[in-house]
Image (cartoon, helix red, strand yellow):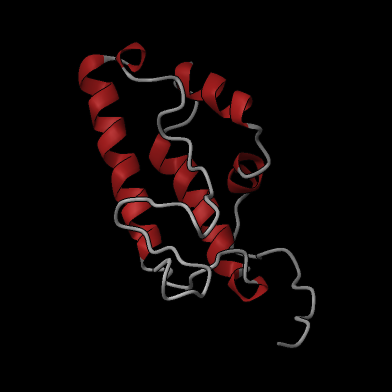
Length: 118
């Protein structure tokens, strides 16, 4: 592994996307509750940034296709919130949470490079 040169800020990121990926969890939750951001919009901004900086190895595994699953899930949560109201869902819904590679999570690989844990 060699050190990766620092990339400039993603030139395709909009001002809104840059704002979204700087939010704290509580700021996101507040904005989502107030209808100022959707789960899909927030997740899409985070995924776009993660894909741009993928060479920095921020994830244990490198199947970036799984990010599409995150966005699909966010869309489903938005539809549920639209039909039943935001208050009907748990407070952290729609908040992507990075997990350590040894966490056992349905549909996402784990293992930290160990066959025993995979």
